[in-house]
Amino acid sequence: MGRVLIVSLVLLFAAVHIVCVSSFPKTAPAFLWTRYRHG
Image (tube, rainbow, N blue to C red; front, side, top):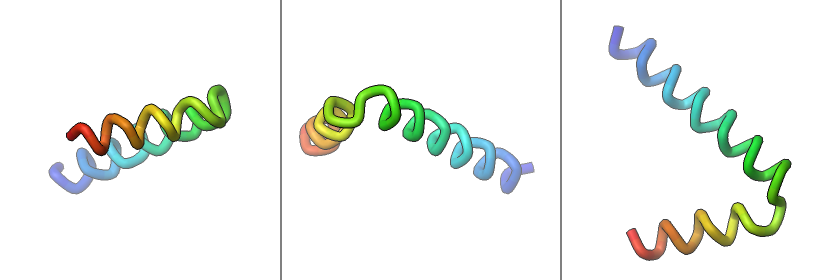
């Protein structure tokens, strides 16, 4: 069960990342980087 949950989360994250990158090729990476740096 735990493995399925992890796989689902990874796929969800990948899907969101792909959508963000395809929709906002320049804003999304900057936003993610800013969010990452601020923790």
